[in-house]
Length: 260
Ligand code: SF4
Ligand code: SF4
Ligand code: SF4
View 1 (spheres, rainbow, N blue to C red):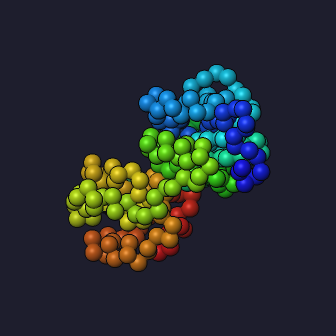
View 2: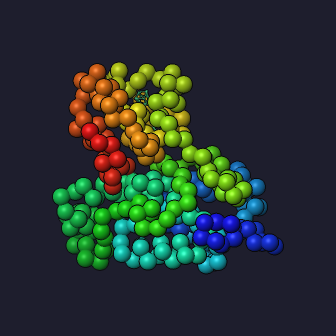
View 3: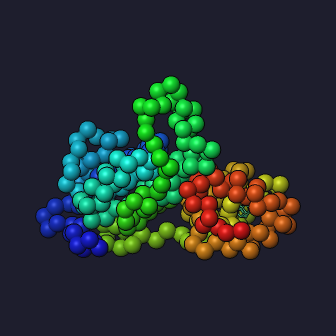
């Protein structure tokens, strides 16, 4: 039984699952499609009633909702609340839904009007928008799958946990742990900037492993250690501003998560 009292599994039925997209690139849904091709047991275990990326049917009777994308318009709020009302379990799928993701980059531009004109040219009036928000800013979220895009194995694990009625376990320790295990040379020792000390692990430190600093697509860890991060910056001869510039890509919605 979920928190809102709705049954996840009905006696004779498989759990009904729906996928929804808001402001996003749909890359996380593509990862879902990719994952399901090699994990047919998941397709067997549930009944997918709505998944625009993969099917034309649009069933409105579902117990589990995966939501990709950010809330960027008033009408998004209405739709999100409708989904929340129907679903026993809501899972935020990917960085756009989890942190606001790249959509929140527009929040830090001088004016949203400039953003609309830049993107839509002389048709800007056709498209309304407001500052991007993660879906948890609008509705209660039961679980999240971080990343841009999501990790296919983590998706499979989360689905299995949800179907078993368990809370999915998402790493809450810093990316540096995984990076050290891979024996990478630290980006700070190579003159780079990396958000690894404050970013949630779980991607196997893929960016530093391939020579790029982490940009924090999996969101920050709970209670990031600001003092330790500052020490790393001082040692590397870098400034807080250089670090905060790196934060804008995926964490512009709430940069005050870390307080320097
Ligand atoms: S998190 Fe990244 S891959 Fe997923 S929908 Fe958003 S922009 Fe696309
Ligand atoms: S490269 Fe980044 S993630 Fe790896 S150890 Fe250095 S700061 Fe941490
Ligand atoms: S290293 Fe950082 S930016 Fe790259 S995938 Fe992992 S969390 Fe995302």
